[in-house]
Length: 82
Ligand code: HEM
Image 1: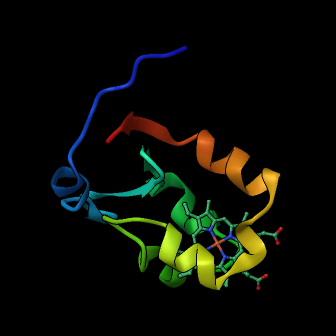
Image 2: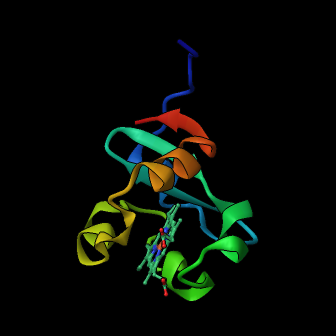
């Protein structure tokens, strides 16, 4: 199992734009999704709503994400743990 760096939620919150890079959390994992923003099937503006924070409140509203292939995409962008 890979060892990932540990970040605080405050550090994640500093990554809210393409210029500062876009980080999100899911559970206790941290992802740098900057390179996925333009590829998001739901559009860049929607995915940027979660920038710097947790995905859960948004994914609770858009059940399209409750699929293994979506989690697989997310996994590819993992950079750390909380
Ligand atoms: C659709 C990934 C964040 C809103 C999708 C789909 C993927 C995806 C793969 C297509 C799913 C399918 O049709 O099988 C992601 C990832 C995210 C993320 C990896 C975070 C890293 C968000 C956020 C929102 C959002 C934060 C809303 C605030 C939507 C919507 C669709 C969608 C509305 C449906 C688009 C359509 O079919 O017209 N997302 N998403 N997504 N996403 Fe996301």
